[in-house]
Amino acid sequence: MAFPHRPDAPELPDFSMLKRLARDQLIYLLEQQHEVDKLYKVENKPVFSTSEQLCFLVRPRIRNMRYIANLVNTDKMAGRTRRYKVIFSPQKFYACEMVLEEEGIYGDVSCDEWAFSLLPLDVDLLSMELPEFFRDYFLEGNQRWINTVAQAVHLLSNLYGPFANCYGIGRCAKMVYETWRELEEEEEGEIKGQKPEIGRIFLLDRDVDFVTALCSQVVYEGLVDDTFRIKCGSVDFGPDVTSSDKSLKVLLNAQDKVFNEIRNEHFSNVFGFLSQKARNLQAQYDRRRGMDIKQMKNFVSQELKGLKQEHRLLSLHIGACESIMKKKTKQDFQELIKTEHALLEGFNIRESTSYIEEHIDRQVSPVESLRLMCLLSITENGLVPKDYRSLKTQYLQSYGPEHLLTFSNLRRTGLLTEQVPGDTLTAVENKVSKLVTDKAAGKLTDAFSSLAKRSNFRGISKKLGLIPRGDSEYDLKVPRDMAYVFSGAYIPLSCRIIEQVLERRGWLGLEEVVRLLNGNEFAVTDMIPEESAPSDSLRLVLVVFLGGCTFSEISALRFLGRERGYRFIFLTTAVTNSARLMEAMSEVKT
Image (cartoon, rainbow, N blue to C red; front, top):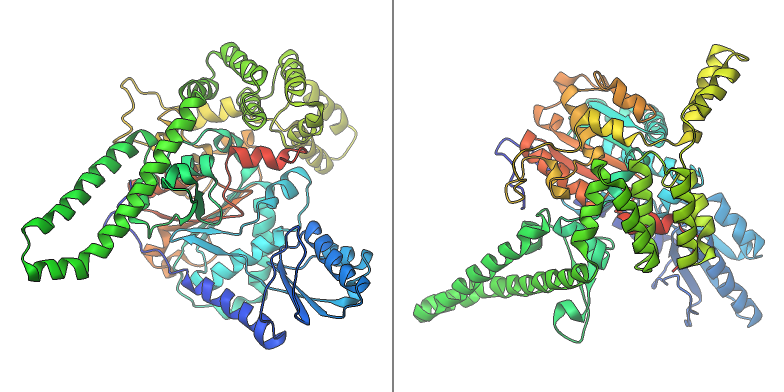
């Protein structure tokens, strides 16, 4: 389902400018400033080079600094003198310089920055490729990436804005917005009078909607990501997919015509589409039989190359589908999906808990077991103390006590919590509030709600109608709403929020939902006069996911765009899924 847009849908901006800017800056850093002829990848092995200068292009991570320090100190012990250059991307952090100083090499290394923070993965998808953002901010409370995201939004505003309306929800979203506005105010004169290409921006924290990220994906692109792991817009297909003894790296974007047709499709429809595509392709090849010499010459020069490329891609995606089917059949995927749907709807909770216990006892997968426990916890607003202790004990006995710290992390982020008596926190709040001023009491209430980390999923689901109620069976071939991305069982909360806010042009009428989501919402509709923004730009919406977004959410919003005449552009700190979310929380590194 390529989702053909309505004739009146706005055109997407051309993001090739971002690539050109980044490329030009890197060329300047490498050639003009530092006369570099080769870059070295930071990995756990020594660098063998006779060059008098080593240049490292790195993410600002502590382990990268330790690796570089080890190389420099090895050269020193060998009596070798070289020049060392470290280029940090997207920015340099003081903590990294401190490590270099602690290792005694700060004076031997010169540092620079390459502000490349936006990687266009597709025509409508930009990624910052910062998978560590989720753990840094939502677990450790580290705000070091806030300025990086604000700078990225500021760059997009300069190139394709200014944005007429800005909406958002979440503490991180609010901080990014405030930092970005400070940057805008500093350069206000430079973008004054510019006609915007993108009219609206929506910032959303990942912890506003954990449920969607924890669900198994069933659209094709999501399943490919869950099964093979899409990295930077490409995937490594193994011999089981390529039908050869070699693996193959494949770029997955709109340029792959076969993939573009099926990426947003529910997996149940993909085989039928690929079969029809194969028949059409065979019919194209069969046309050769009745051709004369002139027609054959035209066919070979104009069509044959394209048909061969399409045949190659078709073969790969059929192989990928077969591989996914084998793995999912082995995992009893249908039973898993049935359990997830029961959790989302709030039915058969005891049976679902028993399924999770069996999953743990059979040691199917530590990540999968943890994911199901988190989904049960969030949909039920925490686990009953008896169930929490029982599941935790069984998990640690099955997978090892080294996972104990992971449970602490999950509790702190609100992913896996134990229910407390309903009035405990409220009672403490009331007593403390009597001893302080009204203003301080308000701040304490915010603090207590933060400590509670209540998901309130049931209440939110009811208010926003996240569980479709239909008498007839859901037709996945002709989806009627965004719920198709989860087999018609659940509309992604994040996407429903975006839909409602755009429809209402703010949060008016959503006060109860905002309260259940713990607030921190904002809407700024007077950033520029709306009449000065072209009407097309107001239907072009930049959605910023802070902490990662899933391919299911992207597919759902593409569907919404087709239905409502919007075009969505996605900016995410990284593309995520349930496994990546659990791994970010884990203290046991696989």
